[in-house]
Length: 141
Image (tube, rainbow, N blue to C red; front, side):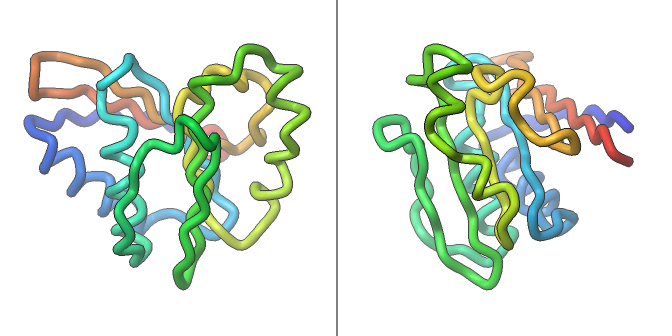
């Protein structure tokens, strides 16, 4: 199943992501793709809010992974610094996908073919400086 939505501000994107999070189940993996500055971290923030996490969510570029506790833990990955699939494989991140939390993966295209089969793909595209087209693909629905 594939859906397309349009948002017209950062706040609207954040609100959409918060609502989207409420449809996610434990063990869900959400792959975020889009150009630098397109809103991947905004969507991660919204997902965190949607599962009841009030922490300040920032891009974990320098640490690759941030773990946020809550009723449903959030595992926030940023693969921007990953240079190859082999490097990604050595990190052992797949243990998080089998857990009781929700995984959000920024720059997911860097792990192409290595994410779980039912990963929800979210692609963010610039339309204007404030408007975004968000395409959501559910491969297992």
